[in-house]
Image (cartoon, rainbow, N blue to C red; front, side, top):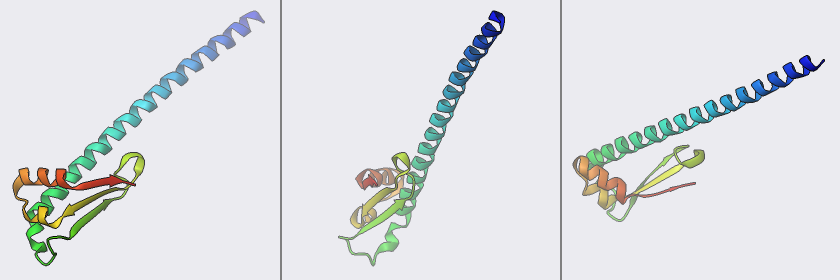
Amino acid sequence: MEQTRAEIEAMRAELRELGKTMRAEAKERKAKREQQRQQSVAQFEQVMVTTLCDYGNTLKALPKDEHVTFVLEGAGDDGTDKVFIFRQRDIANCSGKKGASDLLTKATTYSF
């Protein structure tokens, strides 16, 4: 009887350790997925502003005091939407890779 209890306790301890290991691995996978998601969003943002910078001159009909807005669904923190607002005059003055980076920093951004 004592031997059976000892075996049961040993199995419980082993299960607790296994549970801890599985939770740690799940947490690590979640962190890795979040990091990959953030990298994907950052890469998309760069492509978005580079494209906007390259083709922004085609927005000549848009008055200088207007804005261009992009909403990236699920790209914000905790799955919220990320909103980018670009001033038309900033888009018109944009050129090249440096200009695209500057355009991104000049944009008004928020999540909701």
